[in-house]
Each structure stands twice: as C-alpha cells, then as structure tokens.
Length: 254
Picture 1 (cartoon, one colour):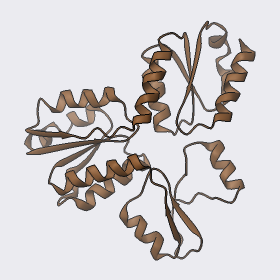
Picture 2 (cartoon, rainbow, N blue to C red):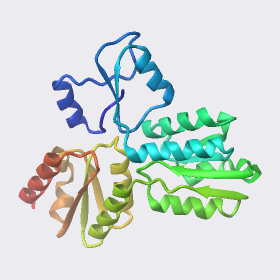
Picture 3 (cartoon, rainbow, N blue to C red):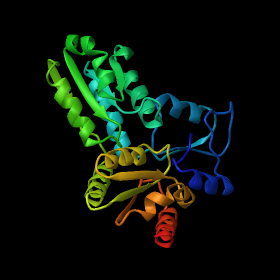
C-alpha cells in the first residue's frame, strides 16, 4: 500500500522484482499486501484482510509508538496536535488512528508550522487539555518552538517527544559536519521527509544542496569546484550504493 520507501531507485528495483505499488485496493485480491513503515489506519487493515489478501505489517516500531501516544491522548479527551506534514502517509495514518479514538474527530489537528497553530489560537486557549505528538522525522528545533508557544497559552499541556532517535542522531552528526564544511551535499529523495528536514537544518549552518543521485551534481559544478571542504550526508531511505556514487563523482569533480 503506497511506496514502500521514498526512493525512486529502490521502487524501480522492487517493481522489476514483481513488488508493485498500489494506492487503492482492488475489490478482491490474492497474494501478500504489505503495510509500509509509515503505517495505516485500522480501517485499511480491515479492508486488506476482507478483500482476501495476506496482510504483512511492516509499520516502523517508532511510528507505532506515535500512533499509540496519539490514540491515548484522543481517548483521554485531549485536543491532539500532530506536528508534521499533512500530506505525508505517516501523518495521515497517525491522524486517522487518533480520530478513531476521539469523541470528537475535530479535536485531532495537524500542524506543519507554528503559523498553523497561531491560526487556531482561540481553540487552543479554550481547550482544557492539549496533547502533542510528532511525525517521527520532525526536528527538535520545531518541537522546542511549539513547546515555547503552547506553554504560554494552554491550561494543561502534555507533550510526547516521538521523534525517531536515529533521525535525531543523524541530524546532530550532520550539523557537526556542516560546521566544518563549505558545502553540504544531502543525498535522498525529495519526497523523503527526513531527508528534506535534514537539508533545511543544514542550510542554516552552511551552503547546502539536496540531490537525489550523482547526475544532479552536474547542476552545481561551480559551487562544488569553489568549495574546499565538502560534507556528504543522506536520508534514512537512501541506498548505500547511491551515496557512494555521489562521493565518487565528487572526488572526480574536485
């Protein structure tokens, strides 16, 4: 159900092996249907089994934790704020599961920025209890910004830090590398949330480019040639061979 991983190279390899991506279930089916790491709602789980597929659940453990925390908050009558990208499959699944537990589904809200929260400030102020969870690939900086804002207007605030530990570690190590680099090259899909967040963080530290593979380096020849120290990092979904191809081309270029 949906792209197994946000990387076009890997998706192409999977399709060549007979593993196809579907976004809508046929009425009846045979074979295996995989729930990807981003998760799905319980309703989708039921649909897959009812239509005759063998269900394989590959939802990431950390994503399941976010879903569980969001469902607990909704069940306990909190106004649930999900910090993340509304169109991202992980966030869609978190939201659907939380709404299934809420007495009022409208009490589950997605916020991709502090501006989204400011637009509903009156709702936040009038709510007795506000609970917060995060898409696993969000940044600590966004979390701290939200806590600072909400703590000044909410009566009762409960924050669950559900950022994936490996995402945090990758971000911290990349920031350290960026501090000693003239240029950072972030390798990974433009559709990958953790990769795009990584690129955004590094742009505040040093010159940063975000590419999907070594071919895109041709667009930045002058920048690369004028950089003395180049750092390379990548998103969680970027295959090792693509990272190495980027490094090899950079070495040839400089």
